[in-house]
Image (cartoon, rainbow, N blue to C red; front, side, top):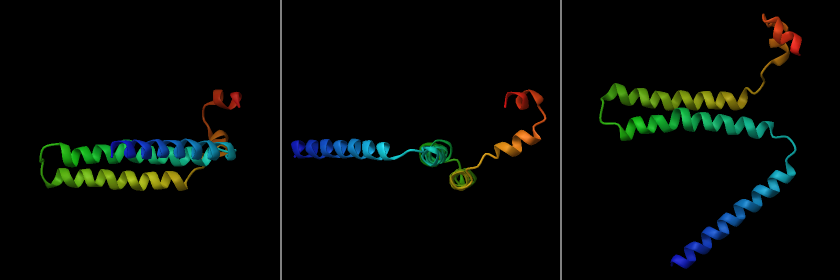
Length: 107
């Protein structure tokens, strides 16, 4: 049984490494990958993990506490979704309206 599980784990590891290598060799622009990665990390590390810790690992602090933790998770999800869809930084508009002339001289 253990030998079979070890074989499955080795096969899964091999499949993940090969699929990662194939996708990496076919991808020329990582912009969208970075956007999705960043948005998912914001959700997991800023909203989901603290929210779940607050819900399940902290001592019972009442209904208001639970509602705040659920609200944290929900708002984090909405912000992460917005981060996936709104990917433009509006660089040209920022440079045109920038009040700091030092930054305009650099660009």
